[in-house]
Length: 89
Image (tube, rainbow, N blue to C red; front, side, top):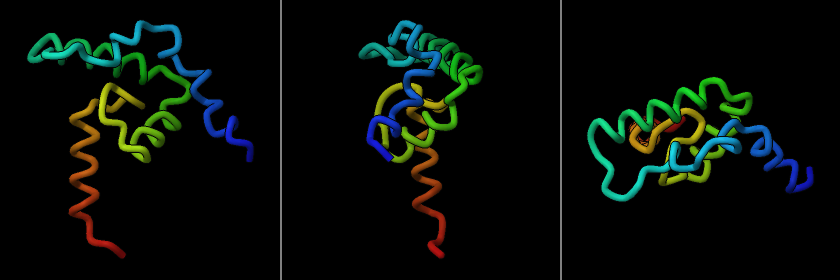
């Protein structure tokens, strides 16, 4: 499979037509402002045709910032912590 095919999904993401600031918090953003921005980003993700591909990418490469595939930074950290606690087969 050509490498370009691995990234093709990004061209179909709803985030491509949305201000990036919706998905990435400004430095120092906390509290209700951050929660509201994250909620807006997640709502966009929920309607996105490539949410699964985006989430898989973010988890695979451990994206440290922003909302990806409907998951906030904190949700991804919780996912990684749960994976680390899971007994290996």
